[in-house]
Image 1 (cartoon, one colour):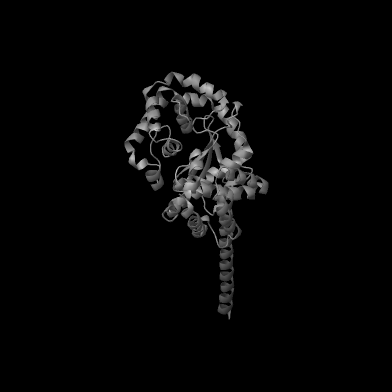
Image 2 (cartoon, rainbow, N blue to C red):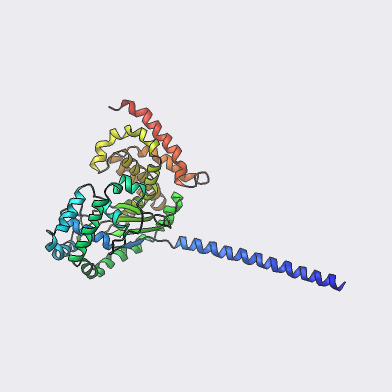
Length: 378
């Protein structure tokens, strides 16, 4: 009887211990999950002035690159006063020559984000898109020269000294923009909507950049690191003015959305390419906006369609309709057939967990449009 009682008592203790251990495990799991959710909730857009971007845009100003921003701000005069003496240096002339040889727009910035700074040592591999579409894979020698000439200009001009001297000015523009942008939880809005997580989000404010922004991304072990480079309003006077509501709607949401939409166009382009006849009716309008070819047009269409839905979700119907009507006025006519597809995606997230899940329906929609219109196109 004593042994039986002792055994019963032992079993009860053992059961209680197991129950406690199990509860402890549940608690630790819950704490871990909460921690992960908290980390996601803390993911904000980092707002910076990037020394690599300033280095490139300042050399572009010196060799009269046409896409330097037109804002008449004091910073531009400060740059010219400091760097004009280097305008005729061979490194500046060679950078201009490389840029003019189809290494323009987003390419030099995308390329530079793969390297440490100021050491210019490669940190990230180039993707198939960067090698094949941006053409990095076929111009290894000229890109090494691009690095060399940038390093040379950086050295002889004392660039870092100038950059440090402007730190108060840089802080003044990044602080106000960062505070406003992160009110809207844009990272969470983007990732929840697209059903895709990215590594990091960086908004690069560049006082010499064009008012219309551009986006790029670099692969990392934690996902893509996204960059959106944005310049001040063209009518800025003395100090760069960033229209924050317009910037968030038309540039931040739009530019970061490219990182979610462009890879889908690339992945499914073999199926989408057969409908390239749809480019002909809008070709003139696209070229006027710097959009060359069916692939680039599709990237913009997907981005703009989803941008409109996101703006409606975050800022309301009126703002979304204004952007939509502006785009229709610019001849983005295929938005009429694409937006309903993405509205369907948004309304049934149990079926469509991520944006890629709706691609078969989108491809079928574009096929149908091509079937009804291409026979009538010259």
